[in-house]
Image (cartoon, rainbow, N blue to C red; front, side, top):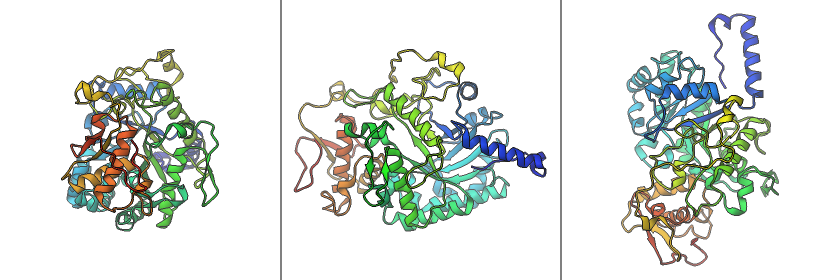
Length: 472
């Protein structure tokens, strides 16, 4: 974590005392490194100024992550001291490989707002490797370097760092955690140069781990940080007591294979929805509150993980608000800690005492108003067995994006890894078939869970073969 010392103290003993006291506060504070993702895919959100005041006065949140560089939101957080992370949209990444464009972006989206707004990080895209867009992926590290150079030119590089968030789809192996490794091709050509950039600039490596997308009824306690018997890594004999630690250590193991154990890991997104479709288990306010409150306690405790002991993790909960215009299943619109009127959906432990009185004694979740664009008949899952498969003629690049998205959520993609039951035939279409069906089954077998931007279709014909068994 970078501390900015006021100039009037920087040359005095008071500056040193300030730094030491501040560092001690950030290490010991119960919520010192807890932020929130401020998404805006909704038409009923409060004005940004009202949001900034609310976070400052009513919560212990001291950092936010934006998915764009919305000037109204950036200005609203001026003089609050809340650390702000802004984002370059994925589609702009190729343009920023030119230094002049990167300098223009910084002049437009950063310089007018600092130091009044405490901008601390620029994210270049979101889950770029999961897009399977070759131009975008090939431009990523260069764009990051150009933005850093632009910050150097503006004398802002010590205050503002550059990074990019990754889904767990960057891993080809994650179980057990000690076997974690990056996907072949991306490891040497993209991630190694990217990690070198992080080392050179002192910027962190950002990941989006979601135990919610990886749990089953049998592993619910493990996902929610509840007491459980633990999971032993057969290679290291280390015992894992929660799923998040396993996900983080898999990323650490992959970084270690490339020679980078000195890079800070930041949790850019994680969360649990408070409402879902009727077929989804353990999606309610109780489990959402349990996950997020236990998450905050764990990442702030200094316990660390089995492979990264005695450390805290800067963590951003997804999300600040329920967002009523997000597509997909009901749960996607109900990840918020707060409703649009800023009443809490539940208490995750980030409210100041004066704000807790607004929580209903027995909170009843109110679903966001928008429902998926499907017919009423398709809202209920079918009684008979059905599977989700790629449509005939579906674009292989689109199917690869489906694989990256699904496996990045944390769903079990081990059967399509090398030497596993469903690895052969080793084609994008075959692997996408297994992954898309796994998602379809896990999300409740609603028709819209098999849409995948019109690349999937439901079938009643069991696609299992040999030892490869498709859930259904």
